[in-house]
Every structure is written in C-alpha cells, then in structure tokens.
Length: 180
Image 1 (cartoon, rainbow, N blue to C red):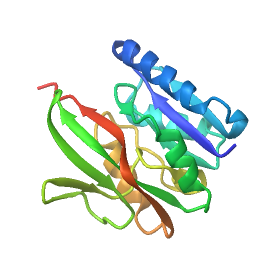
Image 2: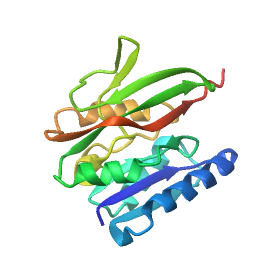
Image 3: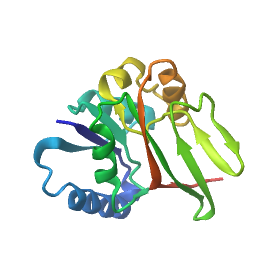
Image 4: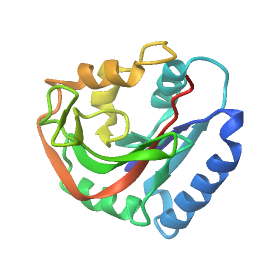
C-alpha cells in the first residue's frame, strides 16, 4: 500500500463528504491496492480524529483531506507521480476561500519553516494536507485539540523532513469557514 488518504468527517458535512468520496473513487479506479481511503466519523476533537486515522493507516504515505474541501481532477495522479522517487514529503499548492469568498493561493513545503504570507500567497510548512511518510508522521502525531492541531503537527515535522518533490500546480481547494 503506497498511500492512505485520511478523512475526518462530521455529520453536517455529509453531502460534501459523499461528493469527495465519489471523486476519490473515480480517481483511484484502476489503481488496485495502492491506495486506501480511511474515514473517521467518531465524536471527539479533530486532533483526536486525525490521530486515530494516522494510527489506522497502512500506507507508506499519509495525507489528510478535510471532508468539506475539494480536490482537483488530477489530485491522485499528481501525488502518485510525486511519490515515485520516495521523498519524505510532497510540496503542494492550492487555493483557499474564507466563507466562500476571499480567494487566496497557498503553497505547502518543507522549505517554509514558518507559516507566513508573502506577496498575497499563504506559505505553510508541510502539514496535514501534504503527503508525508507515515513513519515520520507517527513520530509527531496530533494533539487532542479542537483547533490548531494542524499547526502543532506542522511545527513538529520541522527537522524531520529532508527530501521533497513539489507539485507545481494547484491540486487542493481549502474551504475555510469562519464560524464567528
């Protein structure tokens, strides 16, 4: 098994979750047992859900997709191509919207040691949205938190990632919802 796609879900995202699973299954068609999709709809903090998914994963690499986000039509193919050289992680790009508006580009890479914004682009150190060797991810894990578990995971990966392949086109749409 090469890749475990891990999806924490909550009941209010059921329709979006179903749409995501349909797209993932379409993209995985013909790949056999190279990819597994693992979901977690249990109660608990998002950090606890991510940690449970990480422990359950069997792939050499893990990546998370949030159930309310969208992936590009070539998400799986892009990642599988990047993983052929067996890097520690994969750098990815995408867009982010806030409450359906304020479209911004972002990039995730081991080369960005802090979370910042440069020339209107969010730059993030490798985090849960980027494929990482499972053996490295397990060294860091996720804290039992409702918010900020992704930042803690990202900062824990610093210094552990040495090789990376970057995907130079956007493959992920992160849909941030501000509930304030």
